[in-house]
Image: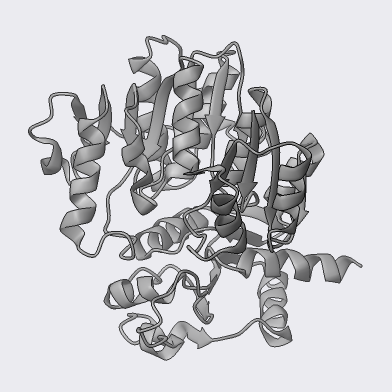
Length: 419
């Protein structure tokens, strides 16, 4: 079977391409630019074309007809490759349709990690623990890691571990054997116009799962009518775990409970203590410089708490994500930044925007922040980098946070300094 992945460098599509490749399918794909994911795919031997005008898709189809055209939800209906695929009569599907097919075809038990925050770290933790216990696994995680590729199919595996995203209602395409819900806070207003729709999607997801583990302080009332949901209380958190961050200790407790549900009797505290983390989740880029994917007020507060466990002085460089999201959460920016000595606030990263919404400027977003005197409106320039370098030289921990270009910019600045 020949599969073409459009947007293959994405954190959802890239791992799926690796899984399909490992499962024996012929895989090619395209993206607009190189990334950590495309570099990983290239090392694996998967051909990635940079450019998406349709020329490469047509060439591939001429050489050996494409059976599936798999694309990300971010692709617009008039995207050249998507339009061409339909004209050529190729089967067109979003990523979850193909993944569900592979899971069913290989008779795997799906362990789905869902939630507004913490999905990636919890998925990585689950992968790490089972790997260290020498249990074969297949998986898909929405980032890169130091302990395995982003996506993997192991013919010897019984379980498939999946970072199951609620965006575009993706997680409703699955009926997991075991679901772990990390947290629930209203998000993705472009998919869920109201908070109630968002909450009901999680209810539907849980209802479609054979068994579920969640927290009772994270909208536990949603699941009162579902026998398959087991709710943990904050007092159940294993506070003795040697992993930084209150939210990470919560996530690790969920993983330990999930391992028990699989019938695996083994002490995992020491394994979790040696968890190397995942890329873009409080990832150390250099001395006193870290990068994090967080872009929600709850995530900001949690990651700053983690950073303060590592340093008494933290400087935050924050890039908001999506203007449409900022319209929903602008009033939620209040006291989440108090653990930062200074905050450098960047313009919002624009993606999948509503053209009818005015672009909110930094000044519109910071006005309710309790420590507003610590906030500096900034941009990606030499002045910002000089301020970052000064803070690092003073022994302060600098945390770059956001899901847009900030991570790549920080890596580029570091690379330029060493050249």
